[in-house]
Every structure is written in structure tokens, then in C-alpha cells.
Length: 436
Image (cartoon, rainbow, N blue to C red; front, side, top):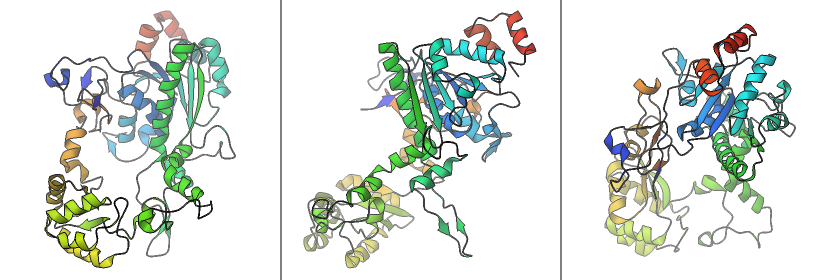
């Protein structure tokens, strides 16, 4: 079932169609997290946790330090009109207020914000708020229902808790990425999709929303400790748990029946010698062939007019990859080179056999499935072309209500409109250095 979100009153592709669900009736345009307020004290990538919440309609107030705010604005290429794309994406939909939490006046404003909020996200090294007298217990005294979520590299416990780190560290630590060596013998970081720096915020957002629901039910807040390294390992649970399972006796833990119970390498490592589940070169690129079930294998052979391949090698009913059958692999290699990738994908749909295009981060944007499911959020609205939140409700993706803010862009709006401060109090805060 499709789910779709409308955040900030906008949708990714706009127009009257955005106001209607799949059946043409009027859709509920209220954001899923309308009425949820989150105070975000984040630096760099971990702030993505609250990006997901803002995309779904939460009021996220980003509390930034004086002197330029979150320096993610100056980190990581590319830069769009002098501002990092990472900032434009991570801070979209949020409001910004500058507070100097080294001052008592700034701390007092922060406490007033917490009194209005459902959650606080601390996305720095563990204990940063605690050192300013704004730890979980102190904030509970202000708001008993507050959920405090700390997201950091290695979490709030363990021997690595205080280590400085960046995003690639979590994938290396978790064993997700292996170092490679160049032609001169130097070791380097290979190209890879970052896992921990994205999975940590996702797990954190799920836990935060769950904790807010519990707090509204019970009246009691929660303290959440999110480690991006933990998240990288958790995303790779199948390989890690497989190695662990293989420590058990071989008569207790085996491989697939189709492999005569041989223990294969975990995950995609065990796919290297696959034939019926493998990547093949096409007339213009590559395609992933996934006929590990007998019925899909039969459908493919019938579709290409090569039932002789099926009859000589019907294989097991499920989980049979024809491992190591080089003769079959050579035949399939010749067959797949006869059509383009797009033609093979269409063929897979026609004969009911799993075939997928093999894209890159550069080429995927031309894929018709990408164009349908992930409509670009345009640069004229957000400062750069960005991908939407990848969940749909009533057939639409969410679109943030505002672009990434400049430091303190909404300070007066928040102080006056949310906290009800008058001009004299705001001027006193400025004089005390609380607003930077």
C-alpha cells in the first residue's frame, strides 16, 4: 500500500493533483507530524535525524552557536552559491535561532524552548548539553514529557565514546567497507554508499517518534542514545549474524539445501560464483539477473527460446544460483549481450523473471522508475535540486515548507511568536550576548 506525506503544505510536484489521493478524493493535507516540536542542537551530518522529522511536518528549531552557526555550511563539496549542498539538504524545513549556551541568558532561553517542545536532539559528542547544565534530568525538571535523543559517532558508552570521528569511520568500524590498494601500493578509501551516517539518523528518528508517542501516553519522557556506528553494524546484521551462526557446529548450522548444505560466505560475498543470480553485460550496459527460484528460471528460458537450458539444468525449487556452472554462465553471457538493458527489464516484466537495471549515482536519475518515485525538489525552492523524503501517502512525496536557514534567520520569529518575548527582553538578551 502506498503511503505519502504532505509536509509544510507543499508537495514535490505541486498542482491540483497534489490535493487528491489515488481515488481522486480530497486528501488530508495536514503534515503527519504537525503539532510535534523538536529542538535540534546538531552539528554536521547527524542533523539528518531531524531532517526526516521536518520533512514529515514537525516544527524543528535548530539552535546554532554564534560565529557562523553549524559549520556544515562550509563542509563537503559541492557548494551551491557558496553554501554546502549538505547544509541545504540537512537543514531544509527547519527554523534557526542563534543562542550562546555558554551564557546563563542563552541557557534560560533554551529552557523556555524545551518547555514548548516534545523532544530535544543533541547531535554532537555525548554530554555536550550536560556540560552546560542542560542534560536529561535538568530538562525533565523543565518538561517531564521531554524526549532527549543524543546521536553521536560511537554512542554515550564504551571505550570509543569520546573519540572524534567522521562518517566513514562508522562504516569502516562496522566492516561494511574494506580498504583497497592502488597501483602504487597505497591503501585508500574505496567508493561506497555511506551507511552509518544515514542509518543512525533513520533509527534515531524512528525511536524519537516512538518515544514521543509513549510520552504523550504516559506523561514521562525518555533518554535515547543513538550511535551511528551501531547503526552501520545493525544495517549489516545478516552478514554479522551469519558469521556468528557459523561458529555453531556444522550439524546444527548449515548452508542452503540447494548447495548441498555447504556453508557459503555471508551476504553478497557468497554470490561471487552465482550464475542464475548474477550481473551480466548487455548491449549497452549491465543487468542483474535473479532467477534463483525454479519458476523464474523456467520463465526466462521459455521467453528466450532456450528450454534446452532449463531441461538440462532445472535446479532446485528455491535458492539455486547454479554456482560455478561456467558453461551455463558463458551461454547466458551471449544471450544477455543481444538486447539493451531497458529491453531486458521490459522482458522481465513480460515473462515474470526478476531483472533489474544496474545504475550508478550519476545514471540513476535517468531511470524511469527514479523519475516516477523520487521527483526532484527544485533548486528554485531549496537552493539546490534535492531528493524528497522517500515515503508516499496518497501517492505524493513530502516537500519541505522552507529552504535551509541562515544562522539565526528565525531568531526574532521564535522569540516573539513562540516564546512571547517583548522587544525589551530581546534587547536585554542581545546585550547579555545570549543571541550571539
